[in-house]
Image (tube, rainbow, N blue to C red):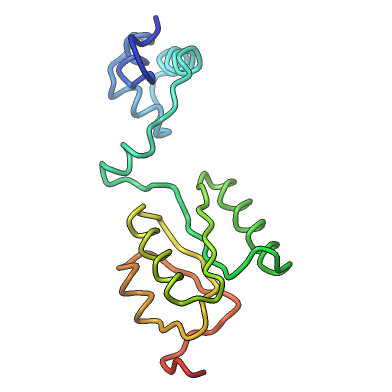
Length: 159
């Protein structure tokens, strides 16, 4: 059995495995189901090449499994190494990384922060552009967990 068109769905997997769609969903979320059902679901997922639709998952309010990284440049060894380490750990934990460069431009940084908010990144790790204020960053990100590294933020933008 293969889907009639497009990408295989949870329903396609359920039909092939002779289980309900909720059973497939539980299996995909790592919730224990009967071993025989788990084997059939795993075989159907493999056979159909099923991959969860992260965009659909995000629309339901679930995590997007993405982390934004904003740094000034990648040709600097410090930032390059930091990006490699962050990406490696994110991947190990099942997250994808969106890398954006502000090139020391605060306006560009704010545009990138707004982009990450629109894409509903689960968190942001950044080295701020000069003159960045904490309240500016938090107002753009509206509750998104944020880690700032390499540069200090202060209430006084002249420091």
